[in-house]
Image (cartoon, rainbow, N blue to C red; front, top):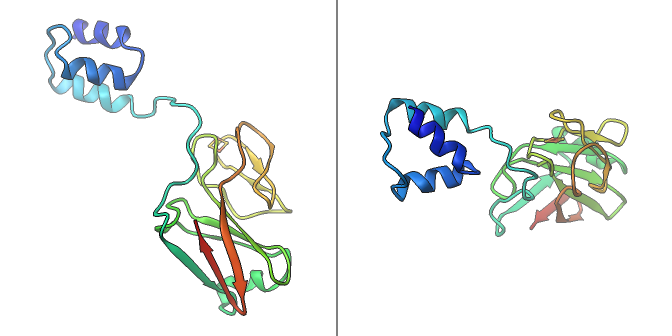
Length: 163
Ligand code: FES
């Protein structure tokens, strides 16, 4: 047990630690203890997250004539949809004009929590309080960059969102 603790302290990151084990750095016994030790390290702070990653060929369509999307029938209205192939974190959709919409990833650029629909024009991340405006720009908090923006068009009642 002491050997594995020393090895972990010598390694700067969990990834280096795992590499050291697989390369046979030192003689260690990998048993129940080490497995539980690794599980406890899952929450390691790896810094800001990459923008939402989904299938770049996926496409979402939203029918604004449906009751659940009725907020988008009004300019300024917003909805938050759940995760799908295009973006596993989900997407915020904002009706910006008669013929324009904006679509933003709900994946917070700080640590990847899912941001909610807008309240008074601001989406506030529930994890550490980052605030985003309807263009995805950071208004405050720890987020280092804007929310990822998708291509979005509206034709009749149908909004189409693509990467
Ligand atoms: S994950 Fe930290 S502010 Fe969103």
